[in-house]
Amino acid sequence: MPFKPVQAERLSSAVVRQIEKLILQGILRPGERLPSERELAEKLGVSRPSLREAVAELQDKGLLASRAGAGIFVADVLGSAFSEGLVRLFAAHDEAVFDYISFRRDLEGLAAERACRLGSETDLKVIDTIFRKMEAAHTKRNPAEEAALDADFHMSIIEASHNVIMLHMMRSMFELLREGVFYNRAIMFKQRTTRDLLLDHHRAINTALQARDGVAARAAIETHLNYVESDLKDQKKSEENESIAQQRFEHEQAR
Image 1 (tube, helix red, strand yellow):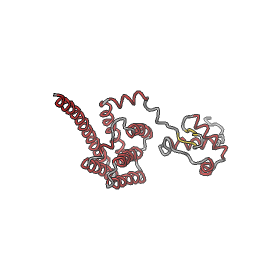
Image 2 (spheres, rainbow, N blue to C red):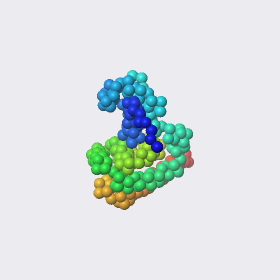
Image 3 (cartoon, helix red, strand yellow):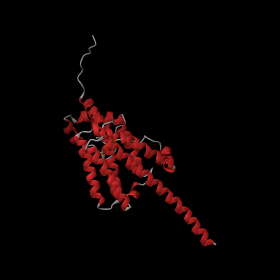
Image 4 (cartoon, helix red, strand yellow):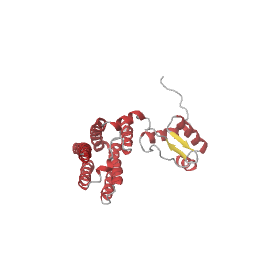
């Protein structure tokens, strides 16, 4: 008979499984500090020794990390997605920038469709809440804040697609974007006409998502990233033209 004796699960194992799932689902994020030992033990309803045992196991697995005098944190599980050499290579070549946008266009379009189909009402509320923050930030003319909310908005769509592989892969990619590896998003938010258009793009994406119109959501994502690609090409061409103009100017002064 295919039966085995049922064994009682240790409390620490149940804690490990719960924290692992929170990390896998992207609820606990890299670098996030866990509550104090006392508070976390109370929240989980376990003894502090059981919690310590669970934390030790998660540290051994590389999912949690302790910092002297600061507490326990979710480990930087995204840090090894790309080697330092490859990140430097990305930053040095325009080809990587435009391949990155193409990759995002495909993946985010798919994520938007999935979010329309699989996202809960709360998922859509999160997306809408971030968009409302984008509208408020738009009036302040703070490029850094708008760029940060832009990243949060797009990640909220990935989260609403409920695919954990896509979630962690795209989080890793967005961390490189935040660090300016591919391009400086804040530059786009410095020009008034560009800022207005970008907000309109995000409004169209949000409207389609709230209506659960997957076709329209994917089309809105593609329209937005096509524009980002075109704008970046214009920026790079402008930089090349300025470099040539500087050479001409220096040559003219020397004549």
